Image (tube, rainbow, N blue to C red; front, side, top):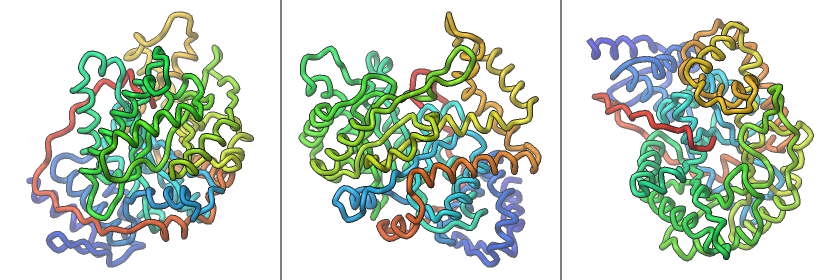
Length: 469
């Protein structure tokens, strides 16, 4: 029965696509764009070998069309060496909800402004609560690129591949192994960019900065070496480290020196980091007020400028990374390229936009789900609006199919609103006209995957309640 289903799946793509054994070719791209919606849907919500074959087909179709997951490492190192000017800030977009619809909006905005320097990302925590394992996530992005006619490298990133401080305290080996296992899964799926986050283990109780950062830089070096062992031939995975946990005290240049000097001494061999994440005043999701609105946040741009400059001039990296930025006021975004910020992470603002544009009954359904299933997270002193705002990300996974099945007009409306926001951010971050730069600095490696003949063991869900976004 499963074999018959696979044959029906492949026949349904004809005459747009030809499949001979493991060779997939595109015979009619406009017709493929008409058929890709159903193929991506099958790759997300199908079962067994049909789902696995659908994912394989999307990957191979991307390869055939010149849409290929790649590493941004070479571009970042070119910025670090001065070969590419640090005049733009690369947006790293956390696609939490409605992956296919959201990614399509990103590609439309990117093509309108010729943006190539952009990252699609998902954090360890988000993989959990949005119900998107790496292979599914990559499939949604590639499928959206096919639908919108995009060409070139796709920079897909594991954001906050983070060590849980509480779990590391009681079971350090198993927690470290959990992150290594996630790296293995993600790299196998096409994540050739990973942010290693061991900053949760910085211990400010020590007297010296080196002692404070020691566990952080030691484990970051360990995970760097692990990633290098997993990377495909010809690809140098872009890796980032983090010197200060987002939402805590602001980072300093002295902390950057302490981390990087220890990291370089510890890393035995191979390529190191291409960027460094810092804390300059933001927090994930913003600070929510009792009425559910967000408090104003001030970014320390002077510190961010100095950290980026030091990262480039002293350590040859592309620069510093700003997290937790999507909920900043609109007039803040133009400052990031002005101060030489390499990369900026954007997540909650897009989630908020989708919630704001959902039909009222869908938003009410999410609210009811949260009250019933996550009421234990409602902290004393919080208003209901604060509780809903802080937890509504946890409704995304359970309601994923409901939102995916919204009628076409509703999805178009949400997509148009997202596209408008992406265009605004791309313009403010000055990444327009970076299509050629992204392609020219990126080594393309043909990366064909074997046609699946069986279904692998499903990855068990993990508790992500204590991890950062």
